[in-house]
Length: 463
Image (cartoon, rainbow, N blue to C red; front, side, top):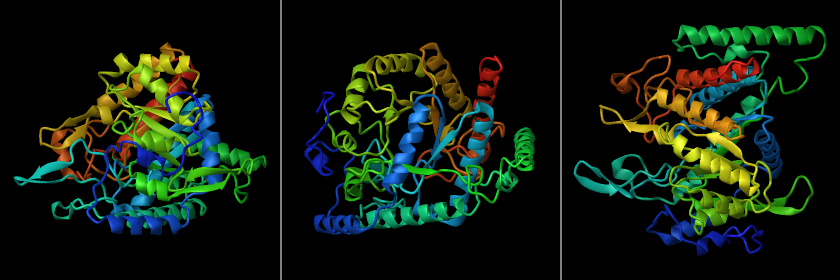
């Protein structure tokens, strides 16, 4: 279906009639069917009410009434399903959103790349290891990182479900227990932050916020014992919808919380996105995404031409619902001027109202002198800065950012206020896929964007 008509022939399994990119070849087909049958009978991980809430919030983002912060690991490990890694990621997302809200003076919608981001597309199905060609690591829900464990195992899909469930359960538990309480922002601090400048700026925001909250309590406008947006926050989960058999098994026909009519919801996560390698117009992933009620993302890079982008939007959002689609642009700091203006104009002329989010990570990956992948913080900030400027020049608005980050003190990206260089990468290089911003570099990004919006309010240009 390439027109703007609604696809009435869609079913959760209709993707199987289309070409599948990044498919996984399992040896034991009978075992695969047993695993999928088990997943079909397991309970949903998220519910339609949560999905609808996110859709409403993303509509506000698309209309410029809120800002999207989406971030987390490039690829989750099952080992990350543990108290410390979960809390660290939540802390950095909450701190970044606090900084952004304070600077931009609009609500921040938080989506974590978490509780399901276990699969990664790869440019090649195999790689060389010690002179031997082996299968590429595809993520913990497909095969193992250890070179001796590269055979795809369908049982890992069940393991992915339960690791996602455990992660979501703990996140819901601590958010409902005051973890995100704005009355106690100083408790979010991670002790190993090194930059005096960041500490002082963050503390200034905390002091001003605390003063404001104290004043609200004095005049009776805020009662901490009463549940409100000051006591907790919404946090939604997301992952790339790469493994279509898994996504199909978790797709359920459930009542719409607004009108009661039944619709198809992907209950593995609140938000899923189509990667740059799997967005073929006649492909399986686009077919699957065209039928689910969840808000969805589409990675948009230099290989996407303007007409193709509009045709893709017409397929996955035939009714042109505002904020249903988030376009996650990933060009690189050197190519964004060449491609983003045309994409903006094409979307404007199409009548679609989307969320424009900048992914400054993927296009700026480079090889370090030590032989590992890294990203330069200067290029990351430059792409964000150019994205803001280009949108403004074209009568549009950047609505959010999409970052690969961690709350841990890793050394995977160079630059930032920490001034990490290539020689520092070996200190704590942990990622088994793409390099992530560490805690301090993530706050750097939040402060620079917040300063831009604060300056814009005061008539001061630029980041």
